[in-house]
Image (cartoon, rainbow, N blue to C red; front, side, top):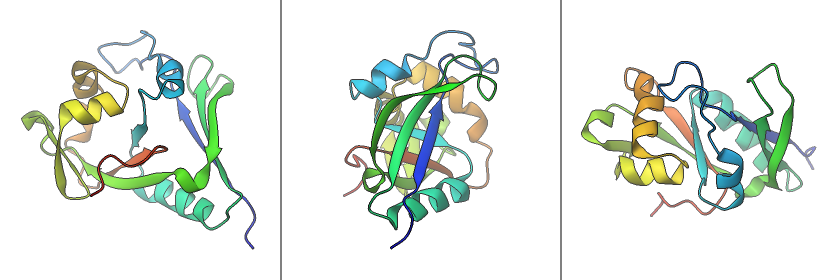
Amino acid sequence: MLKAKTVNIPFMKYYAACSSFAGEPTLFEDKIITGKKIHTIRKSYDYWAQRIDSAHKSPDSIYKLSLWSDKPYVSKQYQAQIGDAQNLWYMPINFKKLNDEVLMIDDQEFPLELIAKNDGLSADIFRDWFKSFVDEDIPSIIIGWTPNPYKD
């Protein structure tokens, strides 16, 4: 049997400086705990997919949803939620139709409003946060820890 893995998924406590909402609290901790944030979206599809696939190979693997206590990468992290890594799922997400208020998840169209809500964001913050993803030629990854609302 393979050694258990830990998939740590960090979140920011405050919106980044590149955002129009810079410095405002994300409230992600509360949204994760109350189930208002059920997934996250990241660049680096291959990196995250490999980590999750590796964790799925061991039934004892876990995931940690962590928050930076202050500034990302320089402050300590603390856990908002820990769970069974077998519950993690992921799919490719494409932002090419963001301006049309539509996103493509695994080649299916979904309304921006729905994805923003499930990501714990208002539509305005979501548009602002992910506007730089529109020009990406490679897919981003959507990672969830509750039942997948985008799967048939």
